Image 1 (cartoon, rainbow, N blue to C red):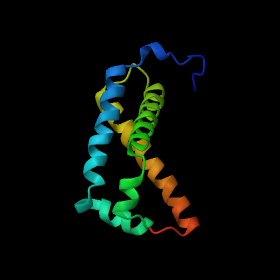
Image 2 (tube, rainbow, N blue to C red; image 1 turned 180 degrees about the horizontal axis):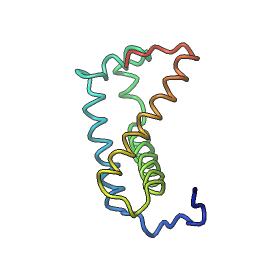
Image 3 (cartoon, one colour; image 1 turned 120 degrees about the vertical axis):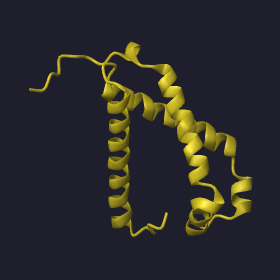
Length: 117
């Protein structure tokens, strides 16, 4: 039976894990979005040039992306809870990620977006 009497407690969040999660997301993203991996293809498919990217406000982009990554990490930590171990957290994070990718994939299909990257 579902126990809904337990209230979320933000004081149980492992803030070091949140920070490590956000930083590791950026590390993985920097490899994933490098031009030799998928960055060049992504850039071509969305019609952005090197000049467009150079003229954009990358500080704002990276700053807000990092903040949103921290929010996602806190959200996942609140769902996992403090009583779970590393293995469960790894599985829950992977399952959440796969679920979000599937949801975005459905949106791409209905919008007719290119699904090359």
